[in-house]
Amino acid sequence: MSRVFLDTNFFVYASDDGAPGKRDRARQLWSEMLVSADLPVISTQVLQEYYNILTHKLRLRPADARTKVLLLGNIDTVLINPVLIEQAMDLHGRDTISFWDALIISAAQSVDCDEIWTEDMQTNRSYGKLKIVNPFSGT
Image (cartoon, rainbow, N blue to C red; front, side):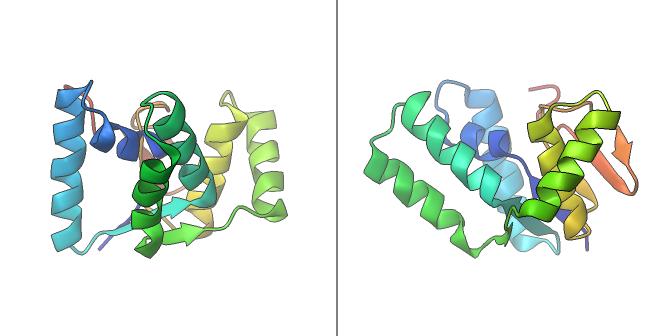
């Protein structure tokens, strides 16, 4: 059993009919995760970014976007707090990653995740035991 942190783009692609290959891959992985022992994790940052992208980039009505975001309510969710923000600032200051990616890493590490599934960071890079995985490579 592993803990997998899902970045915002995972959910965006699952909702994006404009990227059918990535949409199908995200939906396939989500279906597999629901029947596996893997435990998905997100953060309040992911929820906020997802809503913003749904309403702006994908042009969903706010009510429809709200419904999609609320469907994620049963996923283990890390609350972004000042401690995680401080850790992210430290990671950003000593590494070559964006603050927002550092905040995702800090959130994932705070609940002992094994992987982050994202296409926004360097694939196969590790931060301690935490590994970056691009579930969309090849799509």
